[in-house]
Length: 383
Length: 174
Image (cartoon, rainbow over all chains, first blue to last red; front, side, top):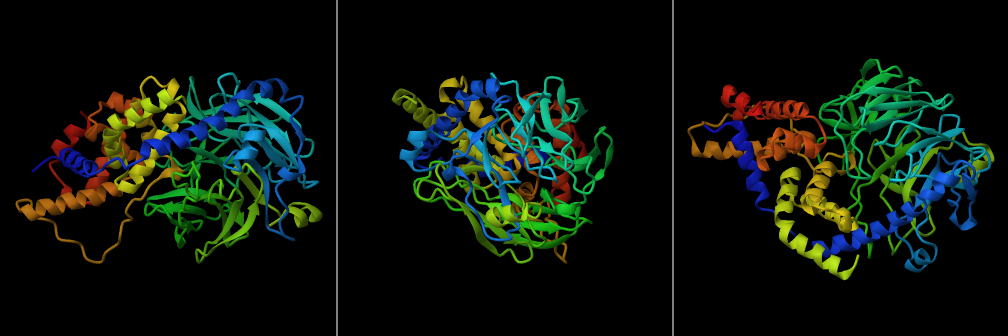
């Protein structure tokens, strides 16, 4: 009888040998690659400007037509930040170029400021602060900043680099944490946003080297404001919860063979993706037991989109206790508006509840609960 | 991208596409997912074409890393509980060999993407531990441990594949 490694080798080879390159793949890759390169070129071009001016001039006033459109009265969610860089009217995109700036909400006024940044986190629990990153180019010192949503001021810090996950802000707005793969080793960097003091927890993870991709995330664990969860690396880290000093204090109960997508508000369970079909998701309770399972169908490519190698719907937030928000991805040339959809976690029923217009289309999106917004603002922008 | 570069890219895909799609299929275990994976990696390659010294290595690395990224995870078969334990195939039986192969194919699909990636790199691409570690961006020790766990998991999922432990262990630590 053959050894198992030999059987594995034969089995993989047998299947792989049946694969063939589909027609037109090179042309599709060329079209999509050039669209991607155009967007990134603009981002690199503004990096030097950001380095010099980001602290002194963190934002400019938004043009009215680029503000996320208002939603419905007494909405439960709102758009906290968005970035435009997807497809849009080619003539408009050619005239203005892909927008290198984020639009970030001032929760007191409901207006959106334009902020040049690489990534933007969710806001702190009091909506006062969020984390922004610099653009992460070769000439950039890879700083992270605490963005004050009221004033637009950014206080910049230099932490271990490179950051390989979007820095997350603690619920109290005091700390930022992110994965880093610096020359000193892999681990989680934690930055005190009052003092600038940097701590790090040395941990091995599966390093990612391809840009824009993520392997590990750092999530602050809701019931424990000063502790965080290291997730999306179940092989080596097993969804371990650490405190700020790096002490391991437990693990998040999750179903076997399931990948965590997001923790429920309050920490009572999580949205997970079982080791099944890509469209299947499940809710787990606080003990790790599956309470419901549903499907979120993959979006289909439309029209002439060059950026559509079958994008996956992305979880963007919770909506009350029984729904979650998903984002099918950027719009395309035919339909640049960006839909946000709600999924009932009990039945899997899915419906579009909000659309963000404008061109270019939104390619990055951060939502937030609307219940802490002032009544007038919530009325105006909530959905 | 100039037309000359576009033509270079087309020639690269024509020459290397067959090898790359087979690696993609090995990584994903699904033809459609393999096409997705390769398409995405080629898109990145096209965007960086003039800066790449070894495009095939870049595509290969991009596919491995994309495959183990959460939002790009592809279809894996879900374990189905059953009230009746299936009979084990007789190892002397030709049909039993076929059953074992089918069982192995199913079991491979139930491995996590990282463990499957290690198996593909080590057994399909015949990379060394050091080569696999460099490709995946981890230590050789991690490759060793993941390989051992992957094989152990396969034996757990499909007991009919249980072979000579000594042979298995010898291979996994080689």
